[in-house]
Amino acid sequence: VNVDRSVMTHLVGKDRVWIVEFYADWCPHCRKFSPLFFAIGSALRRAGSSTMLGGVNCEVHADVCQEHNVQGYPTIMVFYHGSDEKVMAARRQYESNHDGDVRIDTLLFLLSNATSGKRG
Image (cartoon, rainbow, N blue to C red; front, side, top):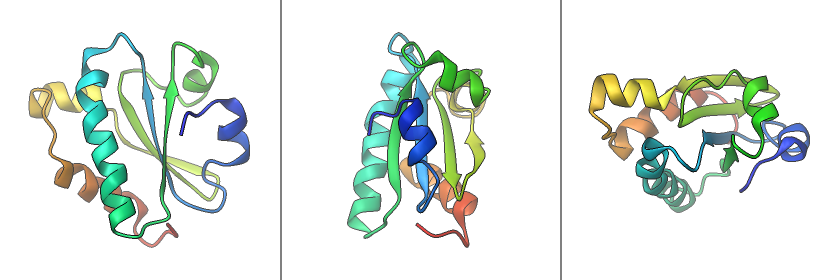
């Protein structure tokens, strides 16, 4: 789901868990992460999860990204019940820990820990 200010205000985190990627089109790490993010969505659907995935293009919606203190791309945040939790500033962790490669099971583990006990 393409996320803008309206979606962030009215939908994200209200009644289900949302995983939101903040990205920039020019960012090579974002382009590398994109297939993994889609794979996460597919895995969640196959598992019957009601968790929603969305993306905020920070070039188009800079105000939304600033509001959430996005400082690197891609940044992944999990939102639920009106709160947010930064799971990972992907660019920094990818560069320092993974040389740009993150396995889907690692990301799903992080997301599972961030949302344990939450609806979704």
